[in-house]
Image 1 (cartoon, rainbow, N blue to C red):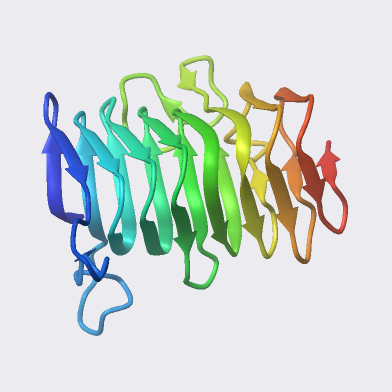
Image 2: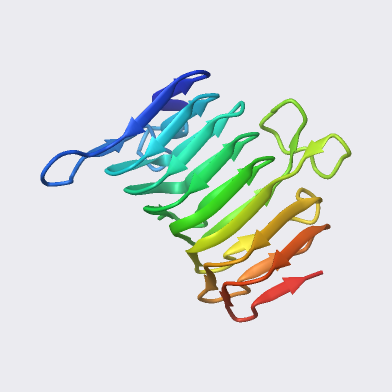
Length: 220
């Protein structure tokens, strides 16, 4: 992997477009869909640091990437990945505004691995919406299945909108046990499939919001 901008532990980056045209753009060209390139191009990588997007556009194969207790805040602007809009591993993602999207085939707006995702505004969209997986204790980036040592993901959604062609929110029966999701507002919508696909052990609590799909929820 290579990142256009890397923010290490203790660092704090705020992306704010003050131009009159509002056309500011951070774009990683080292991408899987670029001829001759084989590595993943990251727009901004929070390696323990904090990245806040207030305005402007960030693009990459993975537009925003967080590891090692990094924090990503999206309060405005556009975050666009060809594979993933946002990726988090043992980190925290807060989305309160703006647009997070994924544009490629089999892409997802967000992949959350052993991390916390808080949605209080904004929009997320992709072929898939939010994918939730476990990671091992200690932050290794390889999924650890459902072992006792695995670190599970959590989602708290109070507002905002997630729109997907297929699952708007989903996990995996072999990689997502003990996931916790609380939805009290906002909307999740699948155009062609189940809005929430829940094939794993875990807690899914819904007290508000709107869930729309071929079926609203499939749990097994």
